[in-house]
Amino acid sequence: MAPWLIPGGQPGRPLSDSQIGQRLHKIIIHPPRARPTALFTLAAELPAAIRAGMLGVHILFAVQWQKASGGE
Image (tube, rainbow, N blue to C red; front, side, top):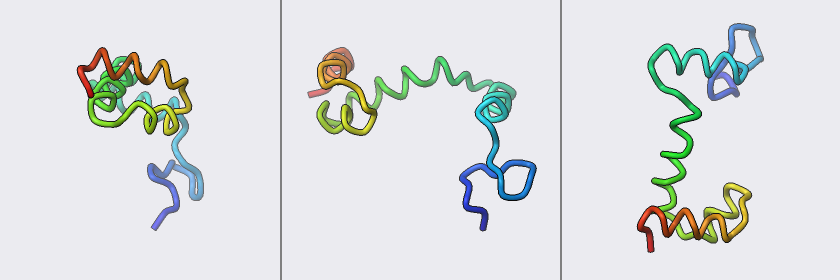
């Protein structure tokens, strides 16, 4: 089993960010648009303090996302 989540074309190397982006774009997934949606969903499901630590963002930013998403 390869140590990489998404193995690249060359043995022992993962796909690059641009290669992953190209593959996602081909199947009509647009990462720049999907990221805010994923963060918004995460904000409704996890406490702000945990999210701030996981994502490396300031706690106030995490609280704002939580309020906007209708989370507790």
